[in-house]
Every structure is written in structure tokens, then in C-alpha cells.
Length: 425
Image (tube, rainbow, N blue to C red):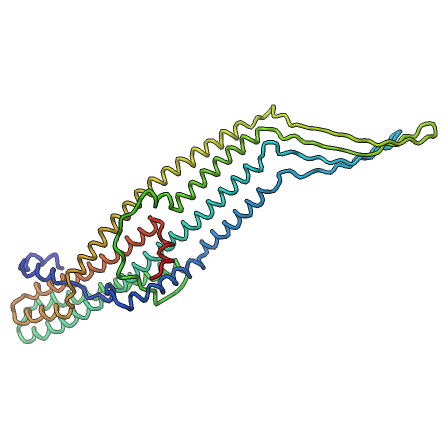
């Protein structure tokens, strides 16, 4: 509707209204109550993280990876016990032990692989933890924005209802035309429709949060209104410390250790054995017995299969892991710089909005009412001005929502989520 009648509004008056149309938002106030919600928000996030099934699964993976490290540290080969008995003209009984030797230290290579995979599991746990925290912050931002938008829609519906009722009275008094009355009725209908849409958006935002947290909470914690200003940062240091980069570095280390294992597996491991026993013979009525001692050595011959293909495969997997790491680094760098720029611009826009002042909605509406009642403004122009005031309030909500989203994205992109969670308010 505002786009239809916008050209009919005097430019000077419209500019004055837009400049003065700041929002007296409880959502945007920096107050002791808002500051006090910071520990509540942190406790809410930490509780959600501690009970999230995905993070519990990641913790279990860390424990499993730790078990694989312990298993890799054990010897590869166990000794074999051999017992032989033979009876013919003589009786022969022997007991022997055989032990395969890890000649090329495959055990050490297995330990390196398992240790690297443990580092991968730990880093991926941190990645999941930080991503879930960012998702929670974004979900809370959407919910509280939708909540404030619903309150604004309720205010719009109330104003339009009062305006429609007053228009009917003025129509009966002959002060308004039928077209202007119809326009007021249409504005009331539109306000009711927007209120319905706002309620739907709020319900959807609440469902999204419930899906992430697994809780049907009605009183979700507030987000901080006074978000700190962006500061200079060392991009290289932040990128190197990112858990997703550390996870990929550990994957490369595991792939490199796997190449070394495949190379060592091409070297045959000998098997040493020793036997002791006794042999008894019966000749010409005489019983002779003597001890038997034996040593044996066996070495597998890698003639039919030299296992070179396994080495080539491991080298290809290592190349893939290295290139994946480089690609992820580039993407993480782009996301970090983009998140920093979005955070800077959103924070600057919000600060500019706060500096513009916050005259109350009631004073703006009262001023418009007086001008309209005195006949100095048409009904169409009045609706344009009022809608512009309300839309400016809605724009303020969007600015703060973008600031919250940019802040959450920055915390995840820079890897500073855990620092924020443990930082004292």
C-alpha cells in the first residue's frame, strides 16, 4: 500500500518522519536486565551442548579412537604353541614355540595412524560443538526477532483498528469520503493478515529452536543487546587454530602414516621357532631315548604379489587429503574474511541506528493523528506516513537480527565460540 501512495507525500515531511522514526524496542535496549541474561544464555548453551545426541556421539568416537590407540600399541603377532607326537618304530614328542617378528616396525606405523585419528576425532568434536553453538545463537536471533515482529504486528493491528473505528465516526459526521473509509477498512484487514503471518513466523522459529535443542522451552534466553565491536585480528593465526583445519591436518598425518604402513607391509616379517622333545626307540629289546632340540626360520616370499598397488593407493589417498586440506583452508579463509566484513558492517549499521535517537511510537502516532484530524493530511497520506513509521521499526528489527547472525557467524568462522562461552560476563 505504501508504494502506491508514496509519491503523494511531501518529501520534506516524509524525510523528517523517516529520520525521526527510531524504535523504542525493548529488544534493543541495553539494560541491567539484558546484561544479566548473559550467564543465563551461556548456561543454556552449555546445557544444550552437554545433552545433544550428536555431540554425545562425537564424544563416544573420541573414546573409541583412544581405544584404537591403545590397541595399536599392542604387539601385532602373538606366539604360537606347537605340540607334535609321532609313533612308529620310535616315539617322538616335541613342544615348540613360534614367534613372528615385526621386523619393519608396523606397530609403530599403526600407532601413528591411530594417534592421528584420535586428533581428528577431538578436532571434529570441537567443530560440531562450535557449529551447534552458532546454530543455537542464530536460532535464538530468529526467534527473538520474530517475537518482536509479532509485537509490532499487534501494535499495527491495534492502531489500524482504532483508525478504522475513528474513520467510521468521521464518515458518519461527513468529514470523510466513502473512498477514504474503504481505504481505512483495507488497512485494517491488511494489518490483521500481517499479524497472522507474524504469529506463524514466531511459531516456526520456536519449532526450529526446539528441533535443535530437543526442548519445548517457551521462555528462551535473551541475546546480548550490547554486542562488542569488531576488532583487528590475525587471520593466519585464527585459521591455523581452527578445529576444522586441525582435523584435516590430522587426517593428512594419518594418510601419511598409512603410506608408511603400506611400505613397511611390503617387507616380509620372519617367523622364528624353537622345539624341544624326546625320541624313544626300541631295538633288539633295548629302549633308547634321547632329547631333541630344533630351530626353524620361515620367511614369506612376496613373489606373486609385491603389494605395490596398496602403496600406490595410499599415496593417492594422501594426495587427496592434502588437496582437501588446502581447499578447506581457502574456504575457511574466505568465510573468515566475509564474516568479519559482515560483522563490521552490521555493527556499524546498528550503532548508526542507535545514535539516531528513539522517539516513542505513541508520540509519532499522536502527531500524525493531530495533522489528520485537522484536515492537513489526507487519509491516504496518513496511512503512508504511519506505515512508513512502522516499517522503519521493522527495519530496525532486521538490522539487529543481521547483527546477531553476523556475530554468531563470526564466532564460528574465527573459532572463538569456546572462548566466548568461558569468558566471564
